[in-house]
Image 1 (cartoon, rainbow, N blue to C red):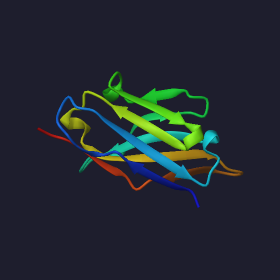
Image 2 (image 1 turned 180 degrees about the vertical axis):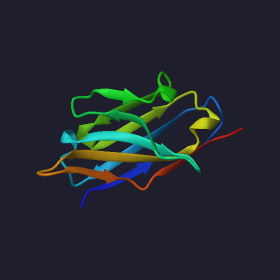
Image 3 (image 1 turned 135 degrees about the vertical axis):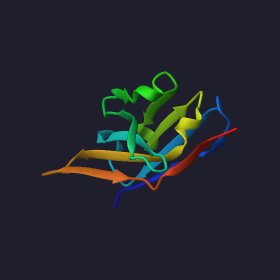
Image 4 (image 1 turned 90 degrees about the vertical axis):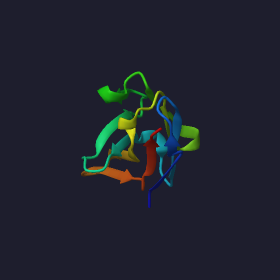
Length: 119
């Protein structure tokens, strides 16, 4: 059973920084695509950033230049460095891992970590 555990969320003032971590268990981490998503109250879950097995990254326009996604395959961990945080970044942040299975795409989600940006 694949498990993803996020950490690093919390309360931060505007302009501050946080680093989220997501540790995966029981999987060949390096073959998975990884992503960070977020869901604010009353809104749909949206992609924040993703990183492929070959380290290709994609960012939402709203976080480009402020957030950086990275992965450490030796530690089964994906990170999201968030700088210059804005109140609009307040949301629950989720980690996702996915890969192609034999006949379908396999996806795994973490439980989420709350990020609150407020003065």
